[in-house]
Length: 585
Image 1 (tube, one colour):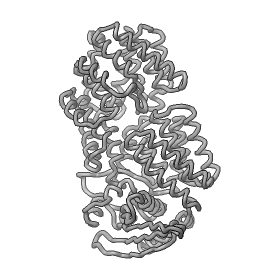
Image 2 (cartoon, rainbow, N blue to C red; image 1 turned 30 degrees about the vertical axis):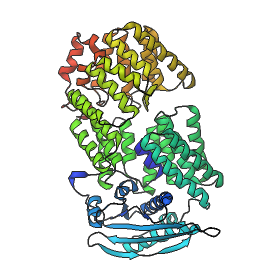
Image 3 (cartoon, one colour; image 1 turned 90 degrees about the vertical axis):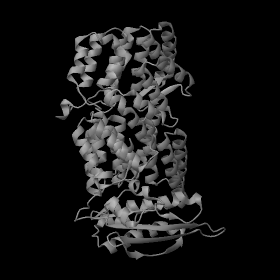
Image 4 (cartoon, one colour; image 1 turned 45 degrees about the vertical axis):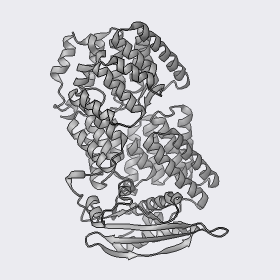
């Protein structure tokens, strides 16, 4: 998701950090540039304006075929850094640095003015090639951005094609108030994404709605709207047809305004992925856009290839993006997850460590790293230490639940569930009412009365939710498990199979295995042990190492009824985390 977010919002975006392997060596044919975050010399509340100026300069320069531009995602790591230009240049593998300051002077009763002072520096000898001061009325801010980009092109002797020059001088909107709402929305979106805070997402949407009310031709604002709505749908914050319709409406507005704009086409490709899992159409669009926007990283391609089960190609594209655009905690984290999925846990840990070296507070990489000992060796003690260091978060509570089950510390798990502030553990592809978690613990404890009580409460919750969202795969999956605990065998199997059919592995090799694992659980609970083993055999033959491993199978009490079966025992003999998956040989 993170990759799609960045690609849709900023076509030139890229990610990643090479860490200990040394600086990236830029191509001799392409000059490499980074636009460092411009320093805000105005009031603190104007920080978003300086950030917006930095991003816009990055975008405009990234349109050029003859210039490699480091994404703002990577560049922002150097905001207020004490590092020298030479150090930054070596870490990012760039030849040139564009930096500067910006001050917005709000003049009461008159025109507001903005002062921008950029400077272009050659990294090799720390030479200041060019500097200028632009002191203009605020209405000229887009012209200032274009003039700065033009001067950089001149100083670096970059050949500019006709369509590229046109893009350099395009204005996103003629309404400065609408543009201000747009920039403020970006600030709220960032907070919402990093903290999975739906309220921040809604604030961003509200600001963007104001922007398009002021300027109904503001294409980028519509793109931002379609992105946020589809993100909320995709990650499960609001998986309703209404939310998806809002995304499509904003996308249709952008398509009506500028159908050939590469950013609009990328948004269309993203929508095909999120709404329909139509990867072939999305790939066609990406390849077309790549011809117009050469600096788009191959991470979008890697995202699609992951879903198609083309693991080696996907990882290669992520690492290619990494080499081109260093210091992105986002893609370092994504590579950590991809390596965990294919069972290469040492490589996974390396990438999580890289992500944390860039952004020490990145929660998801801390969580990913905390799960690795359980997955790779069954070391629950080490995972306990790492989970214990995590901040309060819904996924922290959920992983305490998983850890306690694996350790069979049932009383501790019950205490934690009783004190959790959440009524449901949920993310993009799982939705587990706390009552269902209680039921699973009591099932392991063989306390059937308590199990039935909580399973029925979960059933009521899930049936109501399914009435509102009948195509939500997560709800079918967990309702099937609730039915299994209640002894409603046929209904349980029906719902489990329904979830697998709605989201098959052939449609999404990354998330589809979750529903096979859930079906195996259902079969085990209702006593269809051979069928449960068949599902587990399938899982252990494909990459799904962040969901299950041989060590999870050994520890998890839910598989106790299967342990007497030779086919189940052979899973431990034939599968080793040190062996490559058959699909990866």
